[in-house]
Image (cartoon, rainbow, N blue to C red; front, side, top):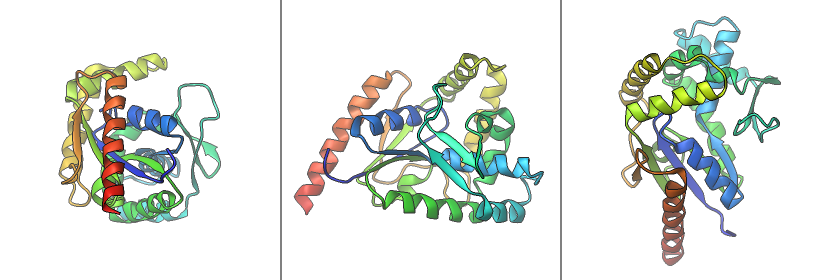
Length: 234
């Protein structure tokens, strides 16, 4: 695909948006950015520096100072990208229950969001991108060519997260994951800043009973329609 485009993929944790985003980027030969890892990285950095995640001022100040890099995978261990903070590879360290417990709070801080939103917009200006998160279509890239909101039931999402951890050889408790996910969904929906809601012009796709291939086909068809409409308006 020669023309430049921006795809915004929003949705809840384990809805399938990251799987879709990564697959789309590979298919379209463009940049893939999961913005959620950026908030997880700030959360990891706060804990690593012994900063209380509830200390909004300290966490926001830290977000301004860390060097966050999101690079192509450098290990064949299932990662979709390599995440570095000040040169340290934290790709899997940001996927622990401890990070899960604090990332929603950290991502609610206006100072943290301002820093990372600025970085995300800078990245989008460089060329075609598939950007994944919770407020991409509503806040970060409101003029995206295609906005998709990916959803799935909380039970299906908890099962997916449980199976991911088991596959990596990590201990996992389905009931605990489910309870944590229910809590995080509530926090994400009720955030006073950038709540997790579909953009008015987003297309909602429920992945409960769809294979990744079916979701991919639907997204590609929607992108083709969106770009055709864009050309007609030009």
